[in-house]
Image 1: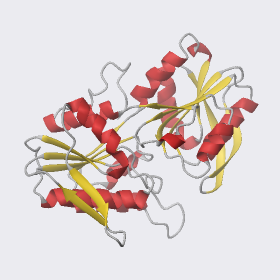
Image 2: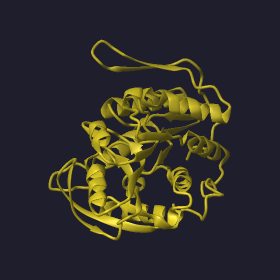
Image 3: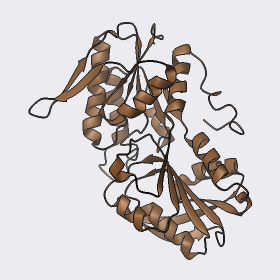
Length: 326
């Protein structure tokens, strides 16, 4: 197993340049000098402009849209660092794409998350640093260490401040049964009650609300989930709690994928606010008034420092109420 390198070097791939820059600034380091370009046929070309020999290299890339291009960039950068004799290579993936394909949902399905894990390992990654994996068991797809950070320590204080003095009238809602555990943990940290939406999904990116378990009438509702993609599930959940008498509805999300009709749906929805984390960089044209972006680059920077110094992650969130489950 590789030991840590002689120093820290942080490099950014295309999808996370600003995020990586903020991480480097927090650590008081310059961003590594590199360039990603394309050959005329679309192949990706990686150029490194400084030595990484013996260094602890952290390459930052969220595998969001365009997912396949961003994954290929990340794999090629890892390979370049390995061939340049980096001491240790950590793939920093704030948003891990393909995480929803973590099992065979029907006959002859691929397990795409496992394939991506194998590709990253084969390319030469020595460890993975990510946040709020859609399926926590994906950590077991890797034969290298995986640090799965949590965004809750940023979102909980935000909503505590937002509903200061009104928390006794606030309820956290899980938008489906798959999100119950994370919503329960979020409700526990806020010290509020919880409700659950029962839905069915007739096809990908389509959901229908069947029932609501719990009381939301005259309550301030916070719908909490790990990601928002086409916003169909979230908007259906918002409509469901409004129809059942909710006083107001806000949403807390780690990963803002926001594909397809997401922005249009959110703009037309009665949701009051969507608080998201910056694991996926949001271009200006997607920053509608309802969206409030909260940064987690400082959490990743602190995690990088701890990885380099061989310090435990379990104390990363000290001062955040009670200890979180890892």
